Image (tube, rainbow, N blue to C red):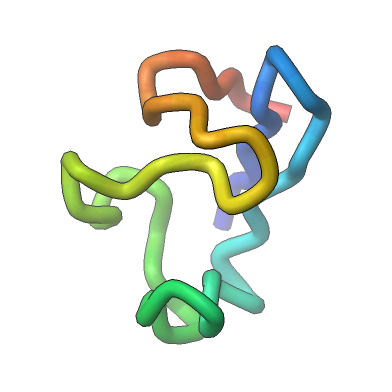
Length: 52
């Protein structure tokens, strides 16, 4: 699975880990994240992430 990086802060979304602190289970692809999901570090929206 592809990792995506937040362009404003550098946070890397790793689908193998997910975002358990925000209810995203491990194995969740970036494209399957809810539209309202935001970067857990800086709050950037999904459209500010780029393929790593």
